[in-house]
Image 1 (cartoon, helix red, strand yellow):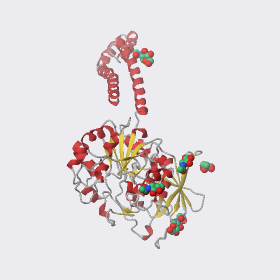
Image 2: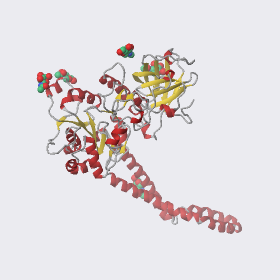
Image 3: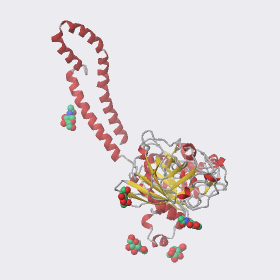
Image 4: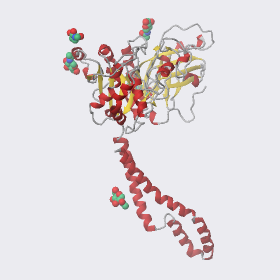
Length: 511
Ligand SMILES: *[C@@H]1O[C@H](CO)[C@@H](O)[C@H](O)[C@H]1NC(C)=O
Ligand SMILES: *[C@@H]1O[C@H](CO)[C@@H](O)[C@H](O)[C@H]1NC(C)=O
Ligand SMILES: *[C@@H]1O[C@H](CO)[C@@H](O)[C@H](O)[C@H]1NC(C)=O
Ligand SMILES: *[C@@H]1O[C@H](CO)[C@@H](O)[C@H](O)[C@H]1NC(C)=O
Ligand SMILES: *[C@@H]1O[C@H](CO)[C@@H](O)[C@H](O)[C@H]1NC(C)=O
């Protein structure tokens, strides 16, 4: 459908161009003619001026008769092509109904893990299947009335015929790797993308769509991201989409995979997991990973704060390993903390956890906002190139603090006791329709700070930060750029007011 549309657009385009370019070449020869004409005209001034005017008009095209028909058909062509383009944007845009989620789960952890799925899955607007290794107690699954917010559960096909020889891994990897094929076999209609995730993965589905819309679902695409861990990427591959972070496979690619996946899986009995098996088959198909760094595998331990406070300038698509890391907000359970994150997610998913960096010049403070998550105030001036690096609040996949462990740059939490950040965590937000802005609030995390002898204002004089931001649903329709923030005047003691939004003409993060 898309192909034929493109062809017709091309035809129209060519029709539009041909007459214009030929008339352009005719116009070039005109100056010489004009010179001759001017000589001629100087002799018979009055009569020939009129003629000159009429020939210059005819320059648009050789034959005035032809010109007319071409011009009108051009107008019609332009009209149709704009109509076509508008239609293609509206009817061809990828929506949630074009996506099918394939969630890898196990009966053993289902009772607990399903709570993560309930946080993001909306049965009314989404399609998906949870693939389990064996039946779960459906009495408990339905008794507490939660089935409505969960996808249907299915049991994966038998995989005992496949050999699995990896000593560290588990043969459930084969079952999980086949989820794409098994989901395809359900024969659901109008599917453009299959999106895989684990039972402990959370998707920000609107941002997932923002990413998928960048790609033509009629082509072969394998979209996801690598691990944070350099060593994991060496053991597996920098070119592999890590399963927990989630990945997307376009429909035609899923079909091509389905044709060969079982044979392919047999060829790699020694691999560890499901995602490396998938990667092996993608390599056989010759399809590389399209890297989108908003998918987060989070192969780390400890506190995600550093990573979430300095999110790359790309939509936040997924979070994973939520059982492994600490709750993302203090004094809450993991589920409560993630529920808290759904408040800003609903108000402005595009801006979720997007960082902006500004300075309070009078106090010599650096301020970093991770919208909907946290605000940090630092004593002293840090350059944006430093602030955009995640601080090492987390441990590596081997539970060590090792700055060489990651596939990206990091910075120490603080180099000087005075520079330990004052952190304000997101508490609430609402949309103010009068000013058309989201007002979000952040409360100071009251933890002891080391003694500081600097003669500089103490950020602990603030208990609260209020951030104003206009919802910006088209943030990612533009070229990627960090938002700007500005410290505003506040007439409330103990409250800092910050404005976040698109950078204005000439505005940069500088002191
Ligand atoms: C241009 O389009 C209009 C309306 O769509 C139609 O009435 C007209 O005949 C068309 N003209 C030509 C030259 O095709
Ligand atoms: C299934 O759930 C019901 C109700 O909660 C419970 O009575 C029963 O023991 C459970 N069965 C198993 C096998 O866990
Ligand atoms: C489930 O929820 C519906 C309304 O959403 C309610 O009428 C029903 O009683 C609930 N069932 C159980 C078992 O809680
Ligand atoms: C969080 O819990 C700690 C102790 O666990 C307590 O000191 C602190 O006041 C609590 N903070 C909030 C905001 O409830
Ligand atoms: C919205 O903002 C205006 C102007 O700051 C304020 O007067 C009004 O009370 C706000 N409305 C709500 C519902 O917060």
